[in-house]
Image (spheres, rainbow, N blue to C red):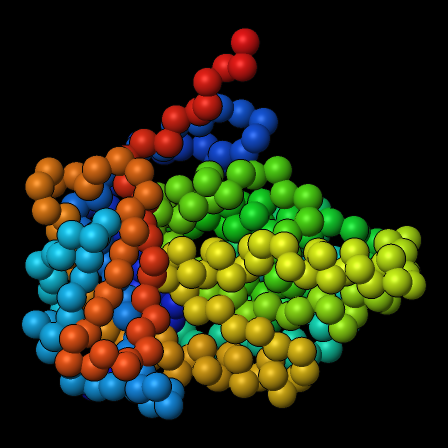
Length: 337
């Protein structure tokens, strides 16, 4: 396999053969209906040995892709260099994120390395309790630099509504009138604090907009004590116990990455952040882009589909791929009355 797709995080999701009707962003405060028409499912897949070395030059017949346990007939695309990229860089500015901001110097250069030579447009969003658009989509590196200069900690904000920020970013991507692929680079702590958007709605919107999320997360454990002191979260044995319990809660950043087929990496130091971006860039430039049309009805059965990729010739291979895709309708829950 030659180095595939100097594209970024994007080989994702369900390719929509026909653009669905415009649907407003979904949240807990309004009802919604999701409709997708999914004829082709794209499955970006990275294959490594158990020691972490990339395995090249695999053939389509060596892959087994299962959709809800049913093997599919697959296609391997080896020429996606011409496809463009719409990327939203989403950076948490609240809570303990302020301690991580010094590590983000040079992020513009890192974005260039991740995107490679493909045509691209980049938008920048920061968030605490609410998302804020700092820079709209542009292919001008100078405009991205100006937007990055406006990226500042919002230490007085105790929220970290990651799911809301991802939902907002997918709504931005849904409004793009081009054939570029969609991606979100999320830089945040691992946990969500205060989102109003339901996880199911975010998962559905990622499928609807054909978006993959790559997460570079900082663990709040080291800075949580300082953060708790700042926000009155408590200290001492009880505060440490609460911190440990919170740390065991659901990891929103990892969940969005795994469900959409993206990469999840964690850092605590400047070197760790730089290495995470370098590792992310390396993985997304060396993957196989598999695709299939679900058996049976040309539109996949409604709901969340489980995906599994196997390579019988390499039973010990480490395979990173998207775990699911969404198809069909997502209707509002019944009125409790």
